[in-house]
Structure formats: C-alpha cells, structure tokens
Amino acid sequence: MNIWDSLHYGAEIVSTVFLTLVKSLLAPLLFALIVSSLGRSSGTSAAGRIGLRAILYFEVVTTVALLIGWAAMAYFEPGAALDSIGRAGVASSGPRLIDALVDAVPTSGIDAMAKNSVLPMMIFFGLIGWAARSRKIEAAPLLDFCDSLLAVILRYSSYVMLLAPFGMVAAVLATLLGGGWKSINSLATFVLAAIVAQLFMGIVVYGSLLLLFRIPIGAFLRATRQALAIAFTTTSSAAALPKALEGMEKFGVRRELLGMVMPLGLSFNLAGSNIQLMMGVLFAAQAARIPLSFSQMLLVLLTLKLAAKGVAGIPRANFVILSATLPTFQLPLETLPLLLAVDGIIDMVRTPVNVLGNCLAPAIIARWEGEELTEQARETGSGDDDSLVALRPV
Image (cartoon, rainbow, N blue to C red; front, side):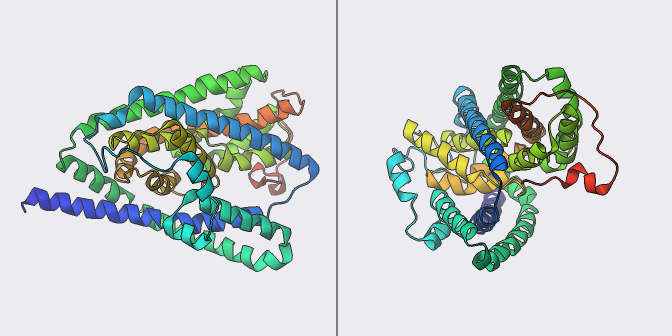
C-alpha cells in the first residue's frame, strides 16, 4: 500500500466515524424534542384558530419548497456528474409507498430507535407526547427528563459538530483520491442549483404571496431588512428572530399574533431548509445512480416533512435529518460530507430565505384574520418586560 492508498484509507475512516456520530444524535434528539413539545403544549380557542391557520400555511409553503428542490435537482442533475458512489445500479431502491406507510406503525419503539427509522419514531414519540399532554401531573417527571435529555443532546451535538471540518475534509479527500475529480464540477453545479432554487422561493413564491394577500412589498422589505442582514451575516434564523419580531410589529402585526406564529415558524416554516433537504436526498440518489419512483418520491417528501419539524436549533440540523433519511431509501451516506463542504456558501442564501418566510407568515395570518397592516412605529415602552425578545408561543 503506497502513501496515497494509506491516505485514502485514513480519510475514509475519519469520514465514516463522523457520519456514525451524526446518526447517533437522531433518536434521542427526536424523543426529547417531540415528547416535551407535545406534552407541554396548551392553548385557548383563539390561539388554536390562529395556530391551526399558521400550521396549515406552513405545511403548504414547505411542500412547495420541497417541490422546488425536486425540480431544481431534476433540471441541473449535479449528482450525475460524480463517479458512482455507493450501491450503483440497484434496481429497486427503498420501500414502496404502501409498504412504508404500513411499516410506519411501530411494533416496537425501541426497535425503531435502534434502526433510526424516522417515520416509526415520529409516530411513536408523537403518541407518547399526546398521551403525556392528557396526563399533565403524572407525566411531569417524564417531561422534566425530556427537557434534561434535550439539553444534554444539544451539547452532545455541538461536540459532534466540532468534528465537522475534519469529516468534511476527509470525505472530499477520500472522493478525490478515489478518482472522483469530477466531484468539484458536481459540487459547483449543486451550489448553483441550490442558489437558483432558494432565490426562486424568496423572489417568485414569496413575491406572489405578498401580491395575493395585498401586503405592501416596499414596507414589508423595510421592516425585514435588518433581520435579513443578520441572517446573511450569522447564517442563524434564531439570531435574526429579535429584529424580525421588532420589524414585523412596526409593520403593524399584533404582538399576540407574532408571539404565536413567529417562534412556531422557526420549527415549522423553514422553507429554505426544506429545499436543501430534498436536494440532499436527490443528490445522493443521482450520485449512486439509483432512480426513485414517483411513489418513493412521495414517501421522501412525507418523511422530510415529518423529520424536519423541531430541529431548527440543532447545529447542521439538515445533515442530522439526512443521515437518518438516506439509509431508509438505500442511498449512500458518503455524499453528506461532500455537501457539508459547500453548505457554508449555500447557507448565506438559505438562512435569509428562512427568515424572510418567517417574517411573511405572521403578516399573511394577520391578513387572513381580516386585519389591516400599516407601517408605523409603535409605542412599546423601554422596560425589559415589554421586550420583543421575550415573546413566546401561546
């Protein structure tokens, strides 16, 4: 074995260890997050109506985002330029839609967690969460445990992501040394496709919604410009939330509505992230030369819609989700570190699209409620108790 073969072998080991650590996050993370969120949820009838409308809007928009990602990958086909990765030429990839829906009903939650099966886990944890919600007193110790577990897993994930640069470099090195010099052109095409898809979502789709709901575009952009600037420079939707809340209140959206819709949107309304998830799945399929049938694509869409909920605060959350989704459809995990290598570039466009959508949602819900929106400087006082940063979902 010469030095290049040794380097190739070592890079593959580092890349595999990193991917394995990422996969280990998913089951405890989803358990703690879903059970705690559902178990502690509550609301009045008014809040329920607004929340229902917000969820309906979020589901429509994120579905459109996933379809945009699908269309971008079908047009640009960046993964096809790679040398074949993984199990190329597999005749039938992943489960059929009807089989997967039947198998989604978990016979054992522990087995689903051990296999990182996303749909069974989501259903199992969701049922536990709703059961805990109906038994608040008896469920209190379980919910406290989930809160503690979530805090620990978030710290654990931050440790794992410290290895991300090494995993990324190792994966790119392993691909190049394995003869995959075409990966540079492939990744460049992927970045182009991602930026085009994100801009289409931000300009065409959101622009159409502004016109449809008769929201003044100039005033809306003035209200969101500071939040968008923060999103671009920090690539963090959460960091942009305070300025987004402040700007949208000045735009004329009621504080009570903002407190319900915008924080909820951090988990349910990340259209830019949904575009990237769909593109990540299809990039792996193209790289492995594995065609996905229409029914399998519908299953991919359903899986991503469920799995993407509630992990906005997780470092590199997209990669955690993809690490569990790709094996479900027999797609290679080896593409993940390659995508991680260019994620920073895409994130500067993806995060502003997420924030723009999160600002647009309360304006649309307000118009849906029959409210008028007028740009104004509201008197919010100067005390800490009146701080917009303190807004929480009702």
